Image (cartoon, rainbow, N blue to C red; front, top):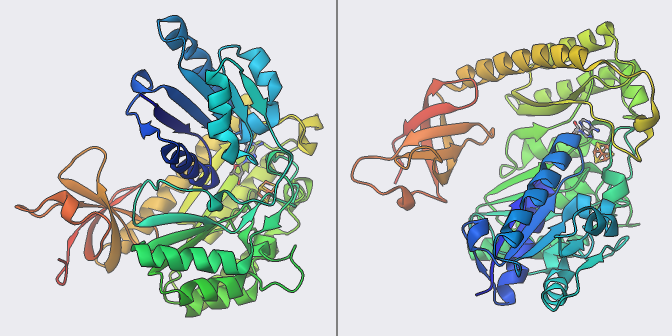
Length: 444
Ligand code: 5AD
Ligand code: SF4
Protein backbone atom coordinates (compact mmCIF):
# COMPACT_ATOMS: atom_id res chain seq x y z
CA UNK A 1 0.00 0.00 0.00
CA UNK A 2 2.79 2.43 0.85
CA UNK A 3 4.18 3.53 -2.46
CA UNK A 4 6.37 6.58 -3.03
CA UNK A 5 7.64 8.67 -5.88
CA UNK A 6 10.34 11.36 -5.73
CA UNK A 7 10.61 14.25 -8.20
CA UNK A 8 14.12 15.70 -8.21
CA UNK A 9 15.03 19.21 -9.36
CA UNK A 10 18.43 20.89 -9.51
CA UNK A 11 21.96 19.77 -8.86
CA UNK A 12 23.83 16.54 -8.29
CA UNK A 13 23.65 17.01 -4.52
CA UNK A 14 19.87 16.84 -4.84
CA UNK A 15 20.18 13.66 -6.92
CA UNK A 16 22.27 12.19 -4.13
CA UNK A 17 19.82 13.35 -1.45
CA UNK A 18 16.92 11.81 -3.41
CA UNK A 19 18.72 8.45 -3.47
CA UNK A 20 18.99 8.69 0.32
CA UNK A 21 15.31 9.64 0.67
CA UNK A 22 14.42 6.58 -1.43
CA UNK A 23 16.68 4.38 0.73
CA UNK A 24 15.14 5.75 3.89
CA UNK A 25 11.57 5.23 2.67
CA UNK A 26 12.32 1.69 1.46
CA UNK A 27 13.88 0.85 4.83
CA UNK A 28 10.54 1.93 6.32
CA UNK A 29 8.58 -0.46 4.11
CA UNK A 30 7.71 1.82 1.17
CA UNK A 31 8.10 0.64 -2.43
CA UNK A 32 8.69 2.72 -5.55
CA UNK A 33 5.67 3.85 -7.62
CA UNK A 34 5.95 4.52 -11.34
CA UNK A 35 3.68 7.58 -11.41
CA UNK A 36 1.92 10.10 -9.15
CA UNK A 37 -1.35 8.24 -9.75
CA UNK A 38 0.11 5.08 -8.20
CA UNK A 39 1.84 6.83 -5.30
CA UNK A 40 0.64 7.24 -1.72
CA UNK A 41 3.51 9.62 -0.96
CA UNK A 42 4.73 12.20 -3.48
CA UNK A 43 8.03 13.88 -2.60
CA UNK A 44 9.48 16.96 -4.32
CA UNK A 45 13.21 17.53 -3.84
CA UNK A 46 13.50 21.14 -4.91
CA UNK A 47 16.02 23.69 -6.19
CA UNK A 48 16.09 27.42 -5.36
CA UNK A 49 19.08 28.43 -7.48
CA UNK A 50 17.09 29.96 -10.34
CA UNK A 51 13.61 31.37 -10.55
CA UNK A 52 12.50 29.08 -13.41
CA UNK A 53 13.03 25.83 -11.50
CA UNK A 54 11.53 27.37 -8.39
CA UNK A 55 8.37 28.54 -10.23
CA UNK A 56 8.01 25.29 -12.16
CA UNK A 57 8.16 23.31 -8.93
CA UNK A 58 5.58 25.56 -7.23
CA UNK A 59 3.35 25.09 -10.30
CA UNK A 60 3.71 21.32 -10.24
CA UNK A 61 3.03 21.07 -6.53
CA UNK A 62 0.01 23.37 -6.90
CA UNK A 63 -1.42 21.19 -9.67
CA UNK A 64 -1.26 18.13 -7.40
CA UNK A 65 -4.21 19.54 -5.51
CA UNK A 66 -6.32 17.87 -8.22
CA UNK A 67 -5.15 14.43 -7.03
CA UNK A 68 -6.42 15.14 -3.53
CA UNK A 69 -9.70 16.75 -4.51
CA UNK A 70 -10.20 14.14 -7.25
CA UNK A 71 -10.85 11.31 -4.81
CA UNK A 72 -7.49 10.60 -3.15
CA UNK A 73 -7.45 12.93 -0.13
CA UNK A 74 -5.04 10.66 1.77
CA UNK A 75 -2.13 11.11 -0.61
CA UNK A 76 0.77 12.73 1.28
CA UNK A 77 2.61 15.54 -0.50
CA UNK A 78 6.07 16.33 0.91
CA UNK A 79 8.36 19.14 -0.23
CA UNK A 80 12.06 19.08 0.69
CA UNK A 81 15.34 20.40 -0.67
CA UNK A 82 16.40 24.03 -0.97
CA UNK A 83 12.92 25.56 -1.41
CA UNK A 84 11.67 23.58 1.60
CA UNK A 85 14.64 24.87 3.57
CA UNK A 86 14.01 28.45 2.42
CA UNK A 87 10.21 28.63 2.75
CA UNK A 88 9.47 26.28 5.67
CA UNK A 89 6.08 26.95 7.25
CA UNK A 90 5.34 29.64 4.69
CA UNK A 91 4.89 26.89 2.10
CA UNK A 92 2.16 25.22 4.16
CA UNK A 93 0.34 28.57 4.18
CA UNK A 94 0.81 29.14 0.43
CA UNK A 95 -0.13 25.59 -0.55
CA UNK A 96 -2.53 24.18 2.06
CA UNK A 97 -2.71 20.79 0.33
CA UNK A 98 1.01 20.20 1.09
CA UNK A 99 1.39 17.91 4.14
CA UNK A 100 5.10 17.92 4.89
CA UNK A 101 7.85 20.49 4.40
CA UNK A 102 11.40 19.55 5.30
CA UNK A 103 14.83 21.07 4.68
CA UNK A 104 18.26 20.08 3.44
CA UNK A 105 19.53 19.31 6.95
CA UNK A 106 16.79 16.97 8.15
CA UNK A 107 16.25 14.40 5.40
CA UNK A 108 16.39 11.73 8.12
CA UNK A 109 13.11 13.10 9.54
CA UNK A 110 11.15 12.34 6.36
CA UNK A 111 9.54 9.03 7.48
CA UNK A 112 8.43 10.42 10.86
CA UNK A 113 7.07 13.61 9.26
CA UNK A 114 5.07 11.52 6.78
CA UNK A 115 3.72 9.43 9.63
CA UNK A 116 2.67 12.54 11.54
CA UNK A 117 0.96 13.95 8.45
CA UNK A 118 -0.85 10.64 7.84
CA UNK A 119 -2.14 10.92 11.42
CA UNK A 120 -3.57 14.32 10.52
CA UNK A 121 -0.75 16.64 11.52
CA UNK A 122 0.69 18.53 8.54
CA UNK A 123 4.18 19.60 9.55
CA UNK A 124 7.00 21.84 8.46
CA UNK A 125 10.32 21.05 10.07
CA UNK A 126 13.46 22.76 8.90
CA UNK A 127 16.75 22.74 10.79
CA UNK A 128 19.49 25.36 10.50
CA UNK A 129 22.35 22.97 10.13
CA UNK A 130 23.67 19.66 11.33
CA UNK A 131 26.94 17.79 11.33
CA UNK A 132 25.18 14.70 9.98
CA UNK A 133 25.78 13.86 6.33
CA UNK A 134 22.95 12.24 4.41
CA UNK A 135 25.51 9.61 3.36
CA UNK A 136 24.98 7.92 6.69
CA UNK A 137 21.42 7.07 5.61
CA UNK A 138 20.41 4.00 3.57
CA UNK A 139 20.35 4.48 -0.19
CA UNK A 140 18.65 3.27 -3.35
CA UNK A 141 20.99 4.20 -6.20
CA UNK A 142 19.64 5.08 -9.62
CA UNK A 143 22.42 3.00 -11.19
CA UNK A 144 24.09 0.20 -9.21
CA UNK A 145 27.47 0.99 -10.80
CA UNK A 146 27.54 4.71 -9.90
CA UNK A 147 27.51 6.47 -6.52
CA UNK A 148 27.40 10.13 -5.48
CA UNK A 149 29.68 10.72 -2.49
CA UNK A 150 29.33 14.08 -0.72
CA UNK A 151 32.61 15.34 0.71
CA UNK A 152 31.45 18.83 1.72
CA UNK A 153 28.07 20.47 2.23
CA UNK A 154 27.26 24.16 2.25
CA UNK A 155 29.33 27.02 0.87
CA UNK A 156 31.37 29.88 2.32
CA UNK A 157 31.87 31.82 -0.88
CA UNK A 158 28.90 34.15 -1.04
CA UNK A 159 28.90 34.83 -4.76
CA UNK A 160 26.61 37.85 -5.08
CA UNK A 161 23.91 36.09 -7.17
CA UNK A 162 23.79 32.79 -5.29
CA UNK A 163 21.19 31.55 -2.81
CA UNK A 164 23.12 28.38 -1.92
CA UNK A 165 24.97 29.69 1.16
CA UNK A 166 21.61 30.86 2.57
CA UNK A 167 19.88 27.50 2.12
CA UNK A 168 22.73 24.99 2.47
CA UNK A 169 24.58 26.86 5.24
CA UNK A 170 28.31 27.30 5.83
CA UNK A 171 30.76 24.84 4.34
CA UNK A 172 31.46 21.71 6.34
CA UNK A 173 33.83 18.93 5.32
CA UNK A 174 33.10 15.32 5.94
CA UNK A 175 35.64 13.29 7.93
CA UNK A 176 38.40 12.00 5.61
CA UNK A 177 38.31 8.42 6.92
CA UNK A 178 34.51 8.25 6.54
CA UNK A 179 34.74 9.17 2.87
CA UNK A 180 37.50 6.67 2.14
CA UNK A 181 35.65 3.96 4.06
CA UNK A 182 32.45 4.65 2.12
CA UNK A 183 34.27 4.37 -1.22
CA UNK A 184 36.00 1.14 -0.10
CA UNK A 185 32.56 -0.26 0.67
CA UNK A 186 31.32 0.80 -2.75
CA UNK A 187 34.26 -0.96 -4.44
CA UNK A 188 33.31 -4.15 -2.58
CA UNK A 189 29.75 -3.75 -3.90
CA UNK A 190 31.03 -3.54 -7.47
CA UNK A 191 30.50 0.20 -8.03
CA UNK A 192 32.59 1.35 -11.01
CA UNK A 193 32.43 5.13 -10.68
CA UNK A 194 32.08 7.64 -7.88
CA UNK A 195 31.39 11.34 -8.18
CA UNK A 196 32.70 13.30 -5.20
CA UNK A 197 30.30 16.14 -4.46
CA UNK A 198 30.49 19.57 -2.89
CA UNK A 199 29.62 23.16 -3.79
CA UNK A 200 33.35 23.81 -3.83
CA UNK A 201 35.24 20.50 -3.56
CA UNK A 202 38.59 22.26 -3.84
CA UNK A 203 38.28 23.78 -0.41
CA UNK A 204 37.71 20.35 1.17
CA UNK A 205 39.32 20.09 4.61
CA UNK A 206 39.80 23.82 5.10
CA UNK A 207 37.35 23.85 8.02
CA UNK A 208 39.03 20.92 9.79
CA UNK A 209 42.37 21.91 11.23
CA UNK A 210 45.09 19.40 10.40
CA UNK A 211 42.89 17.37 8.04
CA UNK A 212 44.23 16.33 4.64
CA UNK A 213 43.15 18.57 1.77
CA UNK A 214 41.39 17.75 -1.50
CA UNK A 215 44.34 16.43 -3.54
CA UNK A 216 45.24 14.04 -0.77
CA UNK A 217 41.64 12.90 -0.54
CA UNK A 218 41.66 12.20 -4.29
CA UNK A 219 44.76 10.03 -3.92
CA UNK A 220 43.28 8.14 -0.96
CA UNK A 221 40.01 7.56 -2.81
CA UNK A 222 41.97 6.28 -5.83
CA UNK A 223 43.83 3.94 -3.49
CA UNK A 224 40.59 2.07 -2.72
CA UNK A 225 40.73 0.65 -6.25
CA UNK A 226 37.57 2.40 -7.51
CA UNK A 227 37.94 2.30 -11.32
CA UNK A 228 36.66 5.82 -12.08
CA UNK A 229 36.55 9.04 -10.09
CA UNK A 230 34.83 12.29 -11.02
CA UNK A 231 34.18 15.33 -8.88
CA UNK A 232 32.13 18.54 -8.92
CA UNK A 233 32.12 21.46 -8.45
CA UNK A 234 35.49 23.23 -8.56
CA UNK A 235 35.88 26.94 -7.82
CA UNK A 236 38.67 28.39 -10.00
CA UNK A 237 40.18 30.39 -7.13
CA UNK A 238 40.71 27.21 -5.09
CA UNK A 239 41.89 24.83 -7.81
CA UNK A 240 45.37 24.03 -6.49
CA UNK A 241 48.50 22.90 -8.35
CA UNK A 242 48.34 19.82 -6.16
CA UNK A 243 44.90 18.91 -7.51
CA UNK A 244 46.09 19.49 -11.08
CA UNK A 245 49.07 17.19 -10.36
CA UNK A 246 46.65 14.55 -9.06
CA UNK A 247 44.57 14.84 -12.24
CA UNK A 248 47.77 14.30 -14.25
CA UNK A 249 49.12 11.36 -12.28
CA UNK A 250 46.15 9.34 -10.96
CA UNK A 251 44.82 7.13 -13.79
CA UNK A 252 41.37 6.61 -12.23
CA UNK A 253 40.74 10.38 -12.20
CA UNK A 254 38.81 11.00 -15.41
CA UNK A 255 40.27 13.62 -17.81
CA UNK A 256 37.37 16.01 -17.39
CA UNK A 257 36.87 19.09 -15.23
CA UNK A 258 33.83 21.29 -14.65
CA UNK A 259 35.24 24.72 -13.78
CA UNK A 260 32.50 27.38 -13.62
CA UNK A 261 33.85 30.74 -14.80
CA UNK A 262 30.46 32.55 -14.59
CA UNK A 263 31.67 35.58 -16.57
CA UNK A 264 34.46 36.87 -18.81
CA UNK A 265 34.68 40.48 -17.62
CA UNK A 266 36.82 41.41 -14.64
CA UNK A 267 34.37 44.14 -13.60
CA UNK A 268 31.47 41.67 -13.47
CA UNK A 269 33.59 38.95 -11.83
CA UNK A 270 34.39 41.46 -9.09
CA UNK A 271 30.73 42.48 -8.76
CA UNK A 272 29.87 38.78 -8.50
CA UNK A 273 32.47 38.42 -5.70
CA UNK A 274 34.18 35.55 -7.53
CA UNK A 275 37.66 36.58 -6.33
CA UNK A 276 39.61 35.80 -9.50
CA UNK A 277 40.21 37.57 -12.81
CA UNK A 278 39.94 36.31 -16.37
CA UNK A 279 43.76 36.27 -16.41
CA UNK A 280 43.80 34.01 -13.32
CA UNK A 281 41.30 31.74 -15.05
CA UNK A 282 43.39 31.51 -18.25
CA UNK A 283 46.44 30.68 -16.13
CA UNK A 284 44.61 27.76 -14.45
CA UNK A 285 43.39 26.49 -17.83
CA UNK A 286 46.88 26.66 -19.35
CA UNK A 287 48.33 24.79 -16.41
CA UNK A 288 45.58 22.14 -16.59
CA UNK A 289 46.12 21.61 -20.30
CA UNK A 290 49.88 21.46 -19.83
CA UNK A 291 49.49 18.79 -17.16
CA UNK A 292 46.63 16.79 -18.72
CA UNK A 293 46.78 17.17 -22.50
CA UNK A 294 43.34 16.82 -24.07
CA UNK A 295 41.47 17.27 -20.77
CA UNK A 296 37.79 18.08 -21.42
CA UNK A 297 36.55 21.29 -19.83
CA UNK A 298 33.05 22.48 -19.08
CA UNK A 299 31.79 25.59 -17.34
CA UNK A 300 28.79 27.58 -16.09
CA UNK A 301 28.11 31.07 -17.44
CA UNK A 302 25.63 33.72 -16.36
CA UNK A 303 24.39 36.31 -18.86
CA UNK A 304 22.71 39.58 -17.91
CA UNK A 305 24.13 40.11 -14.41
CA UNK A 306 23.23 43.68 -13.26
CA UNK A 307 25.52 46.25 -14.85
CA UNK A 308 26.64 43.95 -17.70
CA UNK A 309 27.45 46.16 -20.70
CA UNK A 310 27.85 45.08 -24.31
CA UNK A 311 31.63 45.18 -23.80
CA UNK A 312 31.38 43.00 -20.68
CA UNK A 313 29.36 40.48 -22.62
CA UNK A 314 31.91 40.51 -25.48
CA UNK A 315 34.52 39.63 -22.85
CA UNK A 316 32.47 36.55 -22.00
CA UNK A 317 32.25 35.58 -25.67
CA UNK A 318 36.01 36.12 -26.04
CA UNK A 319 36.81 34.03 -22.98
CA UNK A 320 34.57 31.15 -24.08
CA UNK A 321 36.14 31.24 -27.54
CA UNK A 322 39.68 31.36 -26.26
CA UNK A 323 39.23 28.49 -23.78
CA UNK A 324 37.23 26.50 -26.34
CA UNK A 325 35.12 24.70 -23.75
CA UNK A 326 33.91 21.21 -24.63
CA UNK A 327 30.61 22.10 -23.02
CA UNK A 328 29.01 25.00 -21.13
CA UNK A 329 25.85 25.39 -19.09
CA UNK A 330 24.43 28.85 -19.75
CA UNK A 331 21.96 30.80 -17.63
CA UNK A 332 20.16 34.11 -17.77
CA UNK A 333 20.67 35.90 -14.46
CA UNK A 334 17.66 35.69 -12.16
CA UNK A 335 17.55 37.75 -8.96
CA UNK A 336 17.14 35.64 -5.83
CA UNK A 337 15.66 37.26 -2.78
CA UNK A 338 18.14 37.40 0.08
CA UNK A 339 21.26 37.49 -2.11
CA UNK A 340 23.50 40.61 -2.31
CA UNK A 341 22.87 41.02 -6.06
CA UNK A 342 19.08 41.13 -5.60
CA UNK A 343 19.33 44.76 -4.49
CA UNK A 344 21.37 45.90 -7.52
CA UNK A 345 19.34 48.32 -9.59
CA UNK A 346 21.27 48.45 -12.88
CA UNK A 347 19.32 45.53 -14.30
CA UNK A 348 19.72 44.36 -17.90
CA UNK A 349 16.49 44.40 -19.94
CA UNK A 350 15.12 40.92 -20.61
CA UNK A 351 15.33 41.27 -24.43
CA UNK A 352 18.99 42.27 -24.19
CA UNK A 353 19.81 39.31 -21.92
CA UNK A 354 17.91 37.00 -24.24
CA UNK A 355 19.79 38.22 -27.33
CA UNK A 356 23.14 37.82 -25.58
CA UNK A 357 22.10 34.41 -24.28
CA UNK A 358 21.13 33.22 -27.78
CA UNK A 359 24.50 34.33 -29.19
CA UNK A 360 26.36 32.57 -26.41
CA UNK A 361 24.27 29.42 -26.79
CA UNK A 362 25.15 29.30 -30.50
CA UNK A 363 28.85 29.61 -29.72
CA UNK A 364 28.60 26.89 -27.07
CA UNK A 365 26.87 24.60 -29.56
CA UNK A 366 29.58 25.21 -32.19
CA UNK A 367 32.34 24.52 -29.66
CA UNK A 368 30.62 21.37 -28.42
CA UNK A 369 30.20 20.15 -32.00
CA UNK A 370 33.88 20.90 -32.77
CA UNK A 371 34.93 19.05 -29.62
CA UNK A 372 32.84 16.04 -30.62
CA UNK A 373 34.29 16.05 -34.14
CA UNK A 374 37.79 15.93 -32.67
CA UNK A 375 36.81 12.75 -30.83
CA UNK A 376 35.93 10.82 -34.02
CA UNK A 377 38.32 7.94 -34.69
CA UNK A 378 39.32 7.50 -31.04
CA UNK A 379 38.86 4.21 -29.22
CA UNK A 380 37.92 4.92 -25.61
CA UNK A 381 37.05 2.82 -22.59
CA UNK A 382 33.43 3.87 -22.07
CA UNK A 383 31.07 3.22 -19.21
CA UNK A 384 27.81 1.83 -20.61
CA UNK A 385 24.91 3.46 -18.77
CA UNK A 386 22.11 1.35 -20.29
CA UNK A 387 19.61 1.52 -23.13
CA UNK A 388 19.09 5.04 -24.43
CA UNK A 389 15.82 6.73 -23.54
CA UNK A 390 14.64 6.92 -27.13
CA UNK A 391 15.65 3.54 -28.56
CA UNK A 392 16.01 0.30 -26.57
CA UNK A 393 18.40 -1.09 -29.24
CA UNK A 394 20.84 1.78 -28.69
CA UNK A 395 23.10 2.04 -25.64
CA UNK A 396 24.13 5.29 -23.94
CA UNK A 397 27.74 5.36 -22.84
CA UNK A 398 30.16 7.94 -21.37
CA UNK A 399 33.71 8.42 -22.58
CA UNK A 400 36.40 9.22 -19.99
CA UNK A 401 36.07 12.85 -21.18
CA UNK A 402 32.38 12.72 -20.21
CA UNK A 403 31.09 12.78 -23.79
CA UNK A 404 27.84 10.94 -24.44
CA UNK A 405 28.07 8.16 -27.08
CA UNK A 406 25.21 6.24 -28.66
CA UNK A 407 26.20 2.68 -29.55
CA UNK A 408 23.90 0.18 -31.30
CA UNK A 409 23.42 -3.07 -29.37
CA UNK A 410 25.11 -5.87 -31.36
CA UNK A 411 22.57 -8.14 -33.12
CA UNK A 412 21.55 -11.19 -31.10
CA UNK A 413 22.64 -9.50 -27.87
CA UNK A 414 20.54 -7.97 -25.14
CA UNK A 415 21.11 -4.36 -24.01
CA UNK A 416 21.05 -5.47 -20.38
CA UNK A 417 24.18 -7.54 -20.94
CA UNK A 418 26.18 -4.34 -21.30
CA UNK A 419 24.62 -1.94 -18.79
CA UNK A 420 27.11 -1.05 -16.08
CA UNK A 421 30.22 -2.36 -17.83
CA UNK A 422 33.29 -0.61 -19.21
CA UNK A 423 33.89 -1.42 -22.89
CA UNK A 424 36.19 -0.22 -25.68
CA UNK A 425 34.16 1.93 -28.07
CA UNK A 426 35.32 3.31 -31.42
CA UNK A 427 33.87 6.78 -32.04
CA UNK A 428 32.44 6.89 -35.56
CA UNK A 429 30.35 10.05 -35.79
CA UNK A 430 29.80 13.47 -34.19
CA UNK A 431 26.64 15.48 -33.54
CA UNK A 432 26.49 18.74 -31.58
CA UNK A 433 25.39 17.10 -28.31
CA UNK A 434 26.42 13.45 -28.68
CA UNK A 435 28.65 10.99 -30.51
CA UNK A 436 27.93 7.72 -32.27
CA UNK A 437 30.17 4.70 -31.87
CA UNK A 438 30.57 0.95 -32.16
CA UNK A 439 32.10 -1.76 -30.03
CA UNK A 440 35.83 -2.06 -30.77
CA UNK A 441 37.84 -5.26 -30.59
CA UNK A 442 38.20 -6.49 -27.05
CA UNK A 443 34.56 -5.69 -26.19
CA UNK A 444 32.52 -8.46 -24.55
N1 5AD B 1 20.82 33.41 -11.74
C1 5AD B 1 21.28 32.71 -12.79
N2 5AD B 1 22.11 31.66 -12.67
C2 5AD B 1 22.52 31.31 -11.43
N3 5AD B 1 23.35 30.34 -11.01
C3 5AD B 1 23.41 30.41 -9.66
N4 5AD B 1 22.65 31.41 -9.21
C4 5AD B 1 22.09 32.00 -10.28
C5 5AD B 1 21.20 33.10 -10.47
N5 5AD B 1 20.74 33.80 -9.44
C6 5AD B 1 24.04 29.43 -11.91
C7 5AD B 1 25.57 29.53 -11.75
C8 5AD B 1 25.90 28.26 -11.02
C9 5AD B 1 24.86 27.32 -11.56
C10 5AD B 1 24.65 26.09 -10.76
O1 5AD B 1 23.70 28.09 -11.60
O2 5AD B 1 26.15 29.54 -13.03
O3 5AD B 1 27.22 27.81 -11.27
FE1 SF4 C 1 26.98 29.61 -5.02
FE2 SF4 C 1 29.41 30.68 -5.40
FE3 SF4 C 1 29.05 28.84 -3.47
FE4 SF4 C 1 28.95 28.10 -6.04
S1 SF4 C 1 30.75 28.93 -4.97
S2 SF4 C 1 27.49 27.50 -4.41
S3 SF4 C 1 28.03 29.88 -7.01
S4 SF4 C 1 28.13 30.88 -3.53
